[in-house]
Every structure is written in C-alpha cells, then in structure tokens.
Image 1 (cartoon, rainbow, N blue to C red):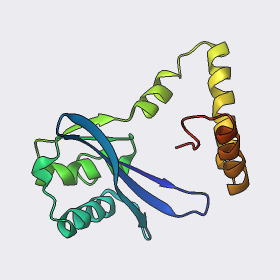
Image 2 (cartoon, rainbow, N blue to C red):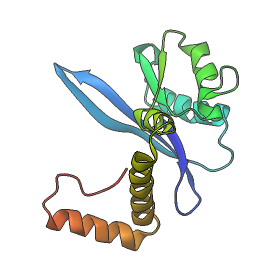
Image 3 (cartoon, one colour):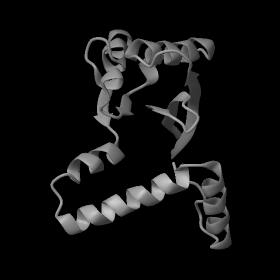
Length: 151
C-alpha cells in the first residue's frame, strides 16, 4: 500500500495484491483510489474498507501488509496500521524495500551516495512532466526493453 501525490497534486492510494493462484504467485492492482480530502490513516483505512465491503472481500484472508514508514500508514493508534489491527489483528506488517534501501543508503560512502543521488535526479526528471515520461517510454520501446515505465 502506498499513498502519494502525483504531478497534478492529486493524492492517490495504490494497493497491490500478491496472492497464490493455483501454484503460481500473482501480483495485480487491487485498488487505485484518489483521496480528495485529507490523507490520514483513518481516510486511507476507510477507502480500503469501503473497497473490501463493496467487493465482499474479507480482512481475514489478508496475511501481510507492506507500506512506507509514513505516520498515516504506520501509526499504531490513528494510522492505517492501528485501524487495521482492530479488524485483523493477525496481519503482519513490513516496510517497503524501496524505503528500506533509502534508509540503508544514509551511511553509504560518498561515491555510492553520488550514484544514488544521480539516479534519483534521472527518475525525477523523467517523472517531472508527461513529455519526459512519453519520451522515456519511446526510448525503452526502441531498445526493446521489457519495461517501459517507472513506478
């Protein structure tokens, strides 16, 4: 689960589900929902709970949640974690590997930090506007890359 703001200042909640289908592990978008007012843990929980109720999904079938370390997500009482623990106390929580890598990069040597900072600049430049994103997608297509978009 992640909540972020896109380039048009729209706050979006994105939930990706990973599950077993027969013997294969599959991953699909479960929910992409705009948060029009505030982005508190309660608002995020209510959006997910509404989707679960609408589609007759049960929290009991959810075994784990991975989020960033934001207060609205990880708060033990008012955050998403606290609200979810009320309806599904069995769920295990973990932090997203991207955010863990960012935290782990803090004590890196200066030469590696520079590489990481340059990578962030490239990604931010590509994601900064739709023209750059389209050009990047075209470049990846020309190179016959398996992936053509940045997350």
